[in-house]
Length: 334
Length: 262
Image (cartoon, rainbow over all chains, first blue to last red; front, side, top):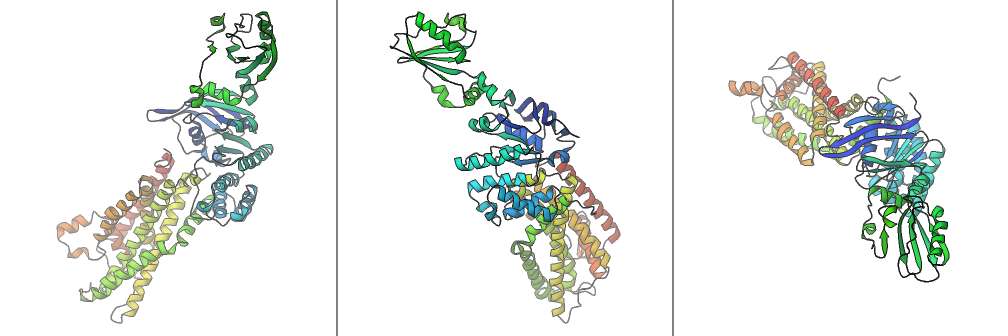
């Protein structure tokens, strides 16, 4: 059976007693995509992955990998999936090369080919010289590399990476990015969960934002960024005595969220700052203010993420609101 | 082409290598313990104990000690490897592999049973050496070798299968110790390893017949010595049914994800 989707779920539910980890999650991830799954802790990302690979039994709904049902056709699913989990779950009795050989063997690879694949995977992630070392004795970064090697040794069509760069230094993170980008270029579908928004922004074709077991949004990073609010800074020739009342009804409804002042600057947060900037400058001019420069800071995926998930970053909640006019709606400002 | 898949063979290889490479903690302890059993019960005390029929006491206890070794090692191996895999999470390597649940159980049970069999052979070897060293004692023989093989195979599979259940059920290392110390070992010691049923009062003899270990020891003793207090064929059938049911329960538990998926 083949499917245009590497992963397809409908109304996927998972309850742990009273706790609902997944609440009717429907998601399609195309074959060959580099797909990111973002969400705060407890969003249900790892549960979602574990349902796909058979470590957790779903409570309801449907989940398929390359068209195969994850429970009824579990062997077809598992033969196509490689997983690098967030928590280390490696056999510590054997040197890492042997662990890879065993894992290749579990996937039906002959002993001879398993040895070749193990060596190749270790070279790919750059720890071949540690092949005779047990997992316990690898450094943290090497352990991260190893779990990726283990996911690769079965040559999967779908590679699932659950926080693969958590706690690794910048150099290793970029090395891991290169490896998985190359794999994706060669046709492997990648499902990446990450806390590093920058990682999703740089690597993923499409991302889904999850919160409390639900899908909040699915789009490309660029599309999601457009949903965020840009920051427009208009430098005035002199410091205004009060926040200028420059928001008119003729401006696109809902596009401006707040107007504040910071010294000689008027700071406007708006959905599409470049679209409203000319009109705002004209309004300032009519109000007697002269703009000397304009700077637009586009929204980041991180800001969109925080907006959509209610904000994980406490510093956001602690931000002072002095000198700001928080706008509930455009009408409220007019 | 082999009927055993490459996946099963890989898992079996992993399991066997694990215990073969650690003989000091897998094979040496039962070897030392049983040597002590033979020294104390077979030689020192055995010489003062009335012989059982035509057989010396050391020959009488040897089949029971073989059963003790086979059952303990089969159970211990299966329960430890599964529990430790769960404890350290690396059993997920197996859970996420394209093996059927039957294949997973097959690999765990067969390799654990093999460890039990190896230990059983070692114990029989140690017993044979002791009988060879004593000119007054007849050498260990095999009165009914097929019965020895059949009983030891069935017993090792049964206890390996029980070990799988134990490994899935346990939530701490203490649970493993409890199962071994308070269930398996007492059954063995009151399982007619060191005494014949015929010396017991009728009440205790009847009570003893509830203990499955009695049938195992008696059956293996029949294979080695040609003497039995219970019909060996009946014992073999009952134990075979028990082993098959246990393995089916193992598969059901794996399929259900008991101890594995939540």
